[in-house]
Amino acid sequence: MAETPIQFGILGCAEIARKVSRAITLAPNATLYAVGSRSLEKARRFAAANGFPPSAKIYGSYEAVLDDPGVDAVYVPLPTSLHLKWAVLAAEKKKHVLLEKPVALNVAELDQILEACESNGVQFMDGTMWMHHPRTAKMKELLSDPQRFGQLKSVCDCEYIGKFSKDGNYGSQQTPWVKINLEFCPVWLYRIARKWKKGYDNLTSFFEFMVNPNQP
Image 1 (cartoon, helix red, strand yellow):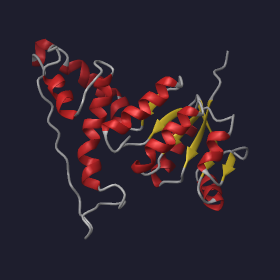
Image 2 (cartoon, rainbow, N blue to C red):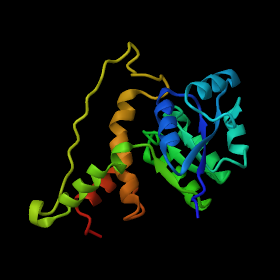
Image 3 (cartoon, rainbow, N blue to C red):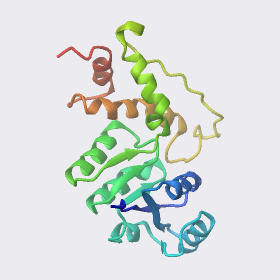
Image 4 (cartoon, helix red, strand yellow):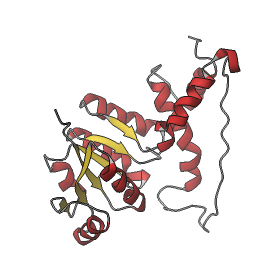
């Protein structure tokens, strides 16, 4: 029996959504079903420029995409400051959520997003390609081999901080780039560890667990 394709709706017309639109088109089990923007004309131009099928639904709002019963899952490439609102609304509308990175401004917002998805029975996936790459799985296999590395006790991350604007922000004034960049990796790691152990009060207690996972 042929697999029924997942019908994707896209909230917004961000530049990164062009690449993901192409990936959805190339995927054998997914199809571009709808796109919504605050501007109907912008949504039309985006669909025309990114290989949407003639049957695709074009909407002048994000709400309209979520209200469409034909949408199975939504891809959300909106500014990070808007992720909490629209990811939770999507989950409440019973849409699976593919959320662009960084997934949230902090772990408290991420917890709300994950809780909304879990309580509504929908799948959550982040848009971090590295997490889902075969090389990452191989890296995990190697690092988990005690004969090669022993017990992994710490993870060090090196980030490049780009050029700032006069107001101290990089990109959107709503989400300072350093805040996003420095919180992205902890939030990503936190999401993984959340499956192992619940109840972190803050990132400090989370990283204590990462270093000593067998401690009570």
